[in-house]
Every structure is written in structure tokens, then in C-alpha cells.
Length: 231
Ligand SMILES: Nc1ncnc2c1ncn2[C@@H]1O[C@H](COP(=O)(O)OP(=O)(O)OP(=O)(O)O)[C@@H](O)[C@H]1O
Ligand SMILES: [Mg+2]
Image 1: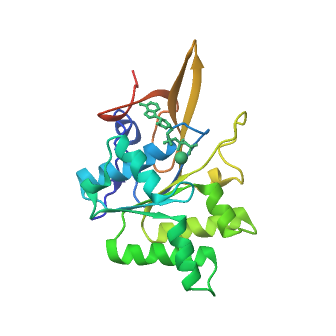
Image 2 (image 1 turned 90 degrees about the vertical axis):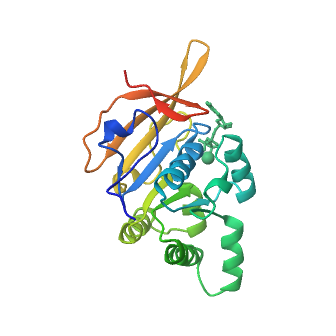
């Protein structure tokens, strides 16, 4: 089942982006280290599986599958609750496939994997965590052009894709190679120090086909999930 918009399940946000992310768009989730990028992206897959019956694949290139699943279960998102709709692919699994298919490049094997999962599960959503590791593993020669092609390929598959980018400490650049121009949307997570507290803020820096507010809103995570405070 394809939805026109994919809900982020961040309370308070969906109402501000016309109901959610336009389906089949490629969205960057960016922020400095430790800004809950992975948790937020996983939550979008998890809640859409649980409540909308949408299928998703989380590609974790930084952390192995077991450690990611344990982290997320600790945050109240146990994959057992959505087993038939959600799968997690890690670098080890891609490497294993790569060994079996010696003549293929890393990115070809990655695409083959996505294609196969798409055929079996009819994927609605995918997360790639993270873009810098994807770029290194794929040995992109022309990062902008190669990424442009990858994003077009994902759009053609009709999979709504969240790509996690990383911002360097002390930098205002959303990502390294101008991927922000290529993507259909950018969700920026920002840590700010106020008095002695470090608080998390969320801003929608860009969302094609969508009228959205530009401000940064406090982002809260608790047992009922993510919420932005918009008033
Ligand atoms: N309610 C909460 N509010 C703020 N932070 C939390 C909360 N619950 C957990 N955390 C912590 O936030 C940290 C960062 O989460 P996460 O790994 O999703 O961030 P990230 O941006 O993906 O980090 P990295 O840059 O390492 O990939 C985790 O250590 C997690 O335990
Ligand atoms: Mg992460």
C-alpha cells in the first residue's frame, strides 16, 4: 500500500508539513554526533510498520545489526513487534554477499540487496545510516553525480528514503558534497546549550511539495515517542 504522505510520527510535526513526508522522496536527516538521528529515523520506520502496516528496511553501516536492535529495544522499539514488516541490514551482511559475488562492486551488491528486499517485501520506506559511510564504501569518484544517480534510482523504486548525514562540530554545512541540494527534504537536528542544559531542536530546512514552517522547535523524546513543541 503506497501512501501519499508518510507520517513522521513526531507529534506536532506532521501537522506542520501537510501530514508527513511526500511518498518516494529522498530526505536527509542531519545533525551533529549524538543528536538522535538514528533513533528518530528508526522510530519513523517502526511506527509506520506498527500503525500503518508499511514495510521498511534499515541499512546500518556504522553500527552492527545486533547492537542497533538492542539500542532501539532499549528505547521501547522492539523489532519483535514488527518482525514481518521491518528488516535491518548491516555492513557484515553486505560484505558476506560481496564475497559470494566476487565480480560485483560494493554499490552493485548494495543495490541488488535493496532490489531483492523490495521484491520480497514491497518496501515503502528505507533508512540509510549513514551517508558518509555509504560514500566511503561505494568509493564514489564523483560524489555529487554518483549520489544524484543513486537518489534517482531510489525515487524510481518508489521507496521513501531517509538518509542520515553528519554535520561536523563547528560547521553549519548540512553535509559534505552538496547532497542537501540533491535531496527532496532536510530535517535538521540541533543541539543547543541553554544555561546548564543541552537541549535538542528540530528544524525542517527544506521539504519539496510542502508548505512548512521554518523555525526550530524543541524536540522531546519519552516513552510515548518523539514530540516537537510548536507553541
Ligand atoms: N529522551 C532522550 N533525550 C535525549 N537523548 C536521549 C534520550 N534517550 C536516549 N538518548 C540518547 O541519545 C543518544 C544519541 O542517540 P542516537 O544514536 O540516535 O544519535 P545519533 O545522532 O544517531 O548519534 P551518532 O552521531 O553517534 O550516530 C543515545 O546515546 C541515546 O541513549
Ligand atoms: Mg547514529
